[in-house]
Image (cartoon, rainbow, N blue to C red):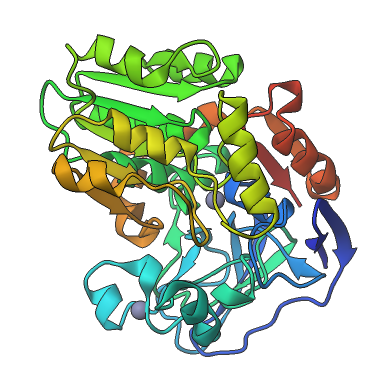
Length: 389
Ligand SMILES: [Zn+2]
Ligand SMILES: [Zn+2]
């Protein structure tokens, strides 16, 4: 089959690779009909995630048709149409029992590797480094889906791929960010990052009852998408973000702040940007936390800072004094996608949200290398790329 493979920093290549097959009774094999490139894939592309190997198959956002099931998969049958969540979860361990699927205790065969970086291991994930299990991803014609009896959700109505594909990651990820904010009527929520996850966090915050959502980015075309969802927008290259947020909130700051940017943030202040860029390049810190620092410093006293942007390891100059002295609550997590599949599918079906609004580019799988470039360099107003094998 054909698959999009990581070939080193800044390089992906669509190559011929062996077809996947059932390795475990709980597996299924899915013929991929749609797959997407995620902001998290860019961290791999840019070489910031350790334990990648040349030839690894990328992709953790995919859906398709079941073509083979293992003997222990009773809920799926050949011919079923499914969306596959990116965290691989057993459904049976202590973490899964608590609904914490992205930290499943049974799905990462390389847990020891992750423990060295992170203390404990999170769940395995598709197409996301050997530290997270080395599972081949879904930017391919076929994918093996472990624990197929737990993760994938069947799509039984006539919804198009583009309406349901993002259940695999970014829609529930943005939604979980908003949920972590514990939104009450009248709340103002600020979202750093107007990429697709930030855009879904904006939509989620409004559906959960926020009074006003403010979205922060530097790309006008992304801010326009957030505006269409009702957000007040701030271009951080034009305004001082903290000052602007205080102006909007009678000097208190937003009730909750969502960091939907993560480790490769940019910053308007060239001196500070150069400082973190240099530390990152020389491996003195792994992550550039501008968005997070600004979220902490802007949040009102007693507010919530929710981190859904991806961080890999260690960062510098984190304002812990602000967190402690101002009674802030810091929440974070890779999305526990399995938890949100049914309720969010119901919302899509009812027309509360149509996630396809984030898509700007549709390309054949063969053009994955161009898709990565467009998305990383924000060329051609690229917001989200969907690939079709
Ligand atoms: Zn993703
Ligand atoms: Zn589990």
